Length: 195
Ligand code: ITT
Image (cartoon, helix red, strand yellow):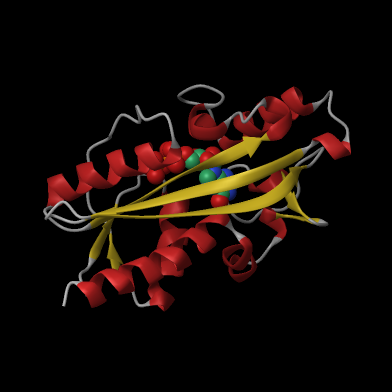
């Protein structure tokens, strides 16, 4: 099987992608990649833009994840703008604070949300493979836990936030874990058919 370049500049996301892909038998390496403008209107379009640019730049098959938090009460925001929700140089804490402020008017039954991960893999011959995963949850009223990254401290599945889960627990439930397990199957079929 090929070695895949992981097309991300987010170190925490990279760590998750590598730790989920490795047990699935998919070997993933990093590379110094140019920044790509995420001009797509969907997670899938942005994942393609990132994977395609990394494949073109390195000449190797490349895998990208475009992901985000979709909040029903906010009509799907921050969605594909999750990373930029509080401006370009903001921190995870800034983004969490902004989301909690926006969610202030909404009581528990109206705090439903989901994480979405769209995985795209582009091969040098132009082949494109895709997979998507979602995880349903609720936006909490204050941050809890120190694990994970991004919006994890305010995204609750049952009683615990994603930031309170172990890495294994998060990978089992998460949008990214689900998307990558589907991706592993799609990849297997691709290799099987191309033999
Ligand atoms: P790359 O594009 O370089 O991969 P990025 O952080 O900009 O890194 P995205 O454009 O896909 O990635 O934005 C995803 C944002 O959604 C991310 O920065 C987090 O704020 C949030 N997010 C995605 N997955 C998450 C997770 O598992 N836990 C918490 N927040 C997550």
